[in-house]
Length: 317
Ligand code: FAD
Ligand code: NDP
Image (cartoon, rainbow, N blue to C red; front, side, top):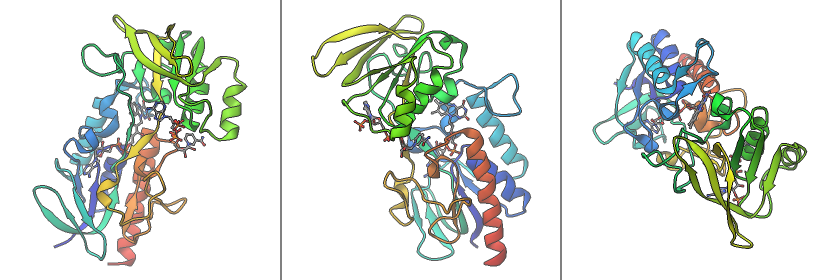
């Protein structure tokens, strides 16, 4: 017998979709993945410390704790959660077919909530080993971590030349004494309006043709070493926070081109809905969102996907 709803993913989008479809008595089956996309079940929030902007937790909550709570709420409504990665989907006809390394089956609707992975740079001192400052000054999300007390009135740096880098540098100037924007080429990729806003901000200093070659410090990040690619000269600058804004990779490679994706691989959804180019397949969270990329927006679209799937099943039994 085909499942009514198959949910793929394990972050706020997947679990919100699971809670809603379970409460609608659709008995969802959720594959949370096993280190899928290099990230533990629970998704991107398992890689962060404090989450301070998810409503309902006025004191803040650690990322892994929040993930555990999402999962526990799904379990409360008897969602069947399987710790396996979906490796293949056949979306050519309904019921759709899925397989993992351990099993295969069929489903009438599929909710894709596989998220995206923030790109990180392999710079000495920026890793998450004992010698690295990952989450001790180095981050891939300024909106998430920028307001932490350790960054207040301190010099910070953002790497990237796209819209994310402009937006994040601008955002960080609310807290920082100064923000260096390290751009590897001598031109930006960002849209004119976003670039102009950053250029107009007196707290942002653009360092063009510049790369970061090391993150340095003792207990936490204190300095970065930067290299001017035109002169090959290196220097150290004081910097207590280093933020990567060099893009994300959506976890869509297993879809094998069966759905319409944009040029960066994000699932295309009809605006204002979670419907994809294949009727009966819905997408929510970061796998279809390159703009907002927040836990709360992922949860919001997870709710939308559940309701869209419920309506679809009602009119396509
Ligand atoms: P994700 O969280 O990306 O999770 C999807 C997960 O699904 C994957 O990680 C993987 O485990 C699983 N999966 C992937 N492929 C498969 C497959 N084929 N089969 C089965 N399972 C699969 N947002 C905030 O609102 N506040 C914050 O403070 C905050 N801090 C952050 C800190 C960091 C370091 C990062 C990287 C992000 C942060 N974010 C924060 C952003 C937030 O984590 C994301 O927007 C949110 O997690 C996206 O949720 P999602 O449900 O779309 O998927
Ligand atoms: P982009 O892919 O647009 O830009 C990535 C930037 O990072 C580029 O400048 C790139 O340099 C640089 N980069 C990549 N790898 C490295 C590296 N290893 N070292 C140094 N620099 C590196 O990603 P964004 O996340 O900025 O944007 C993604 C999409 O989201 C875009 O379509 C953007 O318009 C959209 N967006 C829109 C926003 C808005 O409108 N408010 C806000 C944020 C994003 P190079 O240019 O040399 O390749």
